[in-house]
Length: 258
Image (cartoon, rainbow, N blue to C red; front, side, top):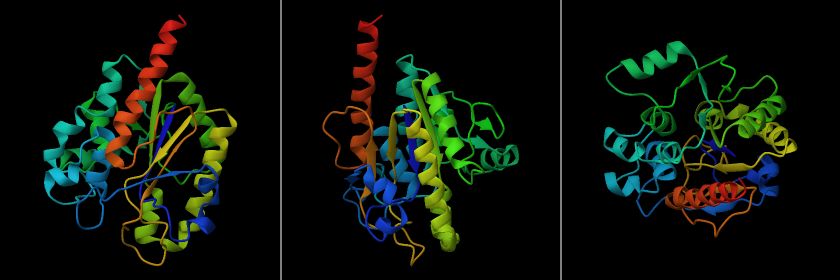
């Protein structure tokens, strides 16, 4: 399975024009506000996705882009740690520039996303760009081929996680490039699905679906899963327990067949 996390993608706005391929996959809307006033942010939203805990309510506000140190104990018990504890083969597939990793990890603040922090806390490596198991986090020269590679990785691992943050970056800083990012994502998904891969796609907050401003939005975010699934969650905190149920069911079936 590939868990493709797309930063800054909400439902609504002009998504019908920008990303019709996603809508054809019939995404389920998830509430990203979690009962907390203000615009949802990456640090608390991603933590909610990965842990099932309402991180924004815990802090008393939405927080980002990087998770507060107060959220690290939650991340240490989240998706990556749980999957490793189950004995699953897990890959955090993002490739990082070595100079970025040095700056992100050696300063006074830890400048890593909740996904990267959770992977690190679970003992998974943060791979350098160019590693055979790594994918760039967007701006692919061959998006369709990158999707096909992701499918090959998903066959080799029980769970592959890839963060696509290029969309949120474009929405904040380069809105004129959003159509390129949506086209890139479409080709990536087409390449992945053509290989028969099982896809889980989710986001943390809205942004890119309203390209006329650079701010996050209150819109629900999409959840797409192309396999058989139990009843779908309604907000970000429901994703981790829901995914646990899916993975546990798959693991049990595999055990019965061996």
